[in-house]
Length: 216
Ligand SMILES: N[C@@H](CCC(=O)N[C@@H](CS)C(=O)NCC(=O)O)C(=O)O
Image: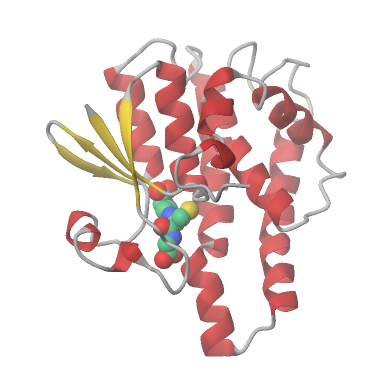
């Protein structure tokens, strides 16, 4: 069985959980606690498994895959139905632009290790760290909202079924809400996120539904 090195609050791991659930692929979740101060991702045995010291990582019968986007592409190629990509190449390019804006331009600037460094090395206050966090989300979301401004009115970002765009959007929206970002300038993103979060695959992948989430 596939084994996902996971953390309930990791938005990058959340993407992979959604992908696995959409494909209906069974997996074992192995929590790696990345909370600052605990930092299991920096210690053995995880460190040898993924020397980048980040979650997620997926253990397959052929070895480890790191990087959520790479894992999702592998999943899509290995379990083609339902596809995470539109058949139309132009739409596919739009989906990849949307997904990589989140994966490579928004998320890395707001990673736990980046925020910790801002606090410890540059004495940034909680308030400034929050401002930093929201700044990169707002900039990225503004670009996405503009990109999709003329898209048809569909339940998911690029059609009637979820694609890689929704897989990336929902975890990033969770981060945005957690840091109290004003989402009113992004009505299309908000509507797609709200709809996708009603889908069983997204519900099962939600942070609060993971076994390592704190019990409320
Ligand atoms: N580009 C990576 C990002 C992975 C990543 O940054 N994961 C975060 C959690 S969302 C992490 O492990 N952070 C630990 C740290 O910053 O020390 C991916 O998409 O998989």
